[in-house]
Image (tube, rainbow, N blue to C red):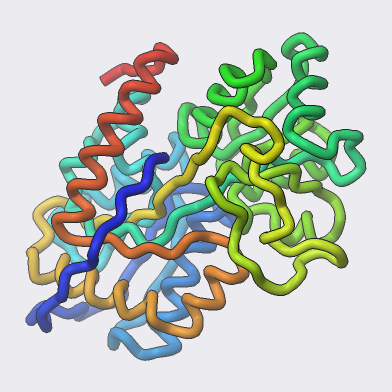
Amino acid sequence: MALVLGTAPAFAQAEWKPTKPVEFVGAAGAGGGTDIFARAVQLAIQNNKLIDQPILVSNKGGGSGAETFVYVKAAEGDGHKLAFGTSNLYTLPMVAKVAFKHTDFMPVAAMVFDEFILWTKGDAPYNDYKSFTAAAKAANGTFKMAGALSKDTDQTLTRLIEKDTGAKFVYIPFKSGGEASVQLTGGHVQSHVNNPSESLGHWKAGQLKALCVFSKERMAEGPKVTQTQGWSDIPTCKEQGAGIESYQMPRTVALPPGTPQAAVDFWAGVLKKVTETPEWKDYLTRTAQTGRFIAGNDFKAFIDEDEKRTRKVYEEEGWLVN
């Protein structure tokens, strides 16, 4: 999704603070990027004693993540339950009849933006975007593309690849990117477009192959992940002739409706501190994501603008229900 650069506001010391255990609720299945994101925040908070209460991470991925948002929405006014999601906070209500809309929630922050990589099986004969999509086109719609959730970012990118190349895919949604990666490793599908963190282990083991990243620039340099490659060694899809220059997704945090503004400010302040910890820097290095913190009015403006852009794409696909 499109990126908007924002400057994080300076958060005053909030009077509100947690008085009981806190729950981070991930809007996807266990082992996926959202689960990893929530646990990275949990680790940074607890290791650096940023709050005085324990934190539980749970995952409610049913209904493409709707289960989480319905659950957190029901905790009206409770600053102890936080929904960890992606752009599905505001895209899911466009494509599914769900019992919430993004304006029901108190947005806290976007903390990181995911890159998207085109992955194939480690022993697949394809070595770049052009050869893979040419094979998919020749297969006459029989190639299977795994993804996390339905009518979400992975399926949207799949449709953009189809428009770019003329290839057709059978898109198969799973509860998380972790599940999609397992399906590709097992040879049950030909590809997926997972975020880096969701296929890290399988790539390191040589079970998956990274063809290209949908980014304007190669990812940041770092240590080798496989015996021969690090994240910066993966070419951009644009380098390989793709017509898609960039595709990224925010990872978001939101509170229930009616949560006091003091609680919103408190959590925004805590999450900003998280981005300054060694644990967070390690998380970004391991997952090859782009760290960018957006909160306050900048975050609200980002949601409004990205919601409008996404709505246009979904309308073209005939996915809109709201």
